[in-house]
Length: 167
Image (cartoon, rainbow, N blue to C red; front, side, top):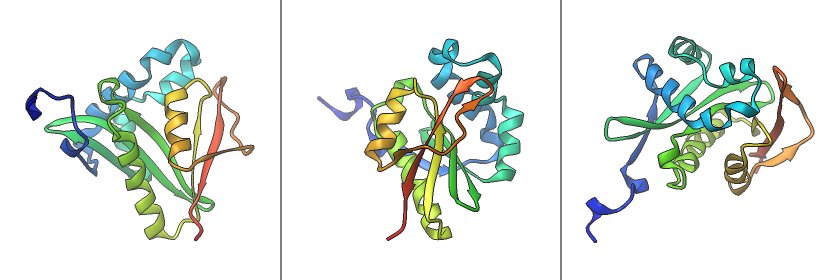
């Protein structure tokens, strides 16, 4: 079988910093990634999880955003914000067609590289208990569940996961 007939391979993915022009594609990836779970979110929590392009463009001012790109198509994204207690990860999503291709893993590696360069002692994120594939990825990457909050967002349950970066 030649490589053109194979499923997408990790080597075809390029991780790069996002720019304002990527905001519409990032919004599409977020929506595509979470739409199957829409009924498990409150309407307002789903709207926060899948923001429009203009909100994503605003996030570029808050912290770093990366995209995973295959040719000219954005297939994944992640955002990170420096906080006093570590680097907070949010807005992580991988297009459903690209799940299982290590895209999420590579996005997490990018965030961890930034965190270590910044001297952050930990990475942390909040997720919903029904995102089982994401939770499996986070655990495989070294995150553990924490009792710290937040415990909900606009009526949708959350829990926090942490990865310590101390040597």
